[in-house]
Image (cartoon, rainbow, N blue to C red; front, side, top):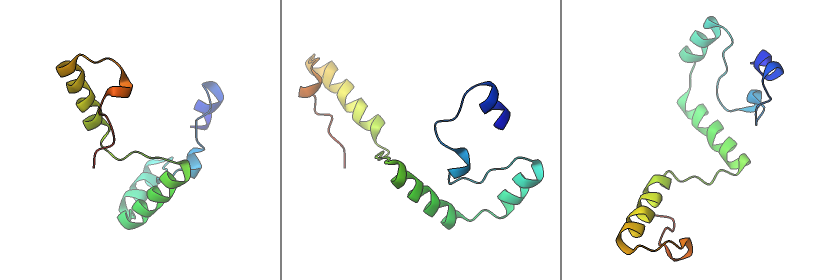
Length: 88
């Protein structure tokens, strides 16, 4: 990863700060898999997403599908008239 950064470009985020276990060798990968703790992982990911300001709710595809159906049914092209609000 370090050589990629030097040769290609930097990452958007410091990958050492990501909430995911990082393995540089096969042995580290095996250890990370064996010691994986789902509760700790979920807490770290939740904290990370809160810190970076992620507002994804998992329903973006549903919302865009509603917009497409609306466009097909009405022919309206103005986005401000399309009922594409957040779904519950």
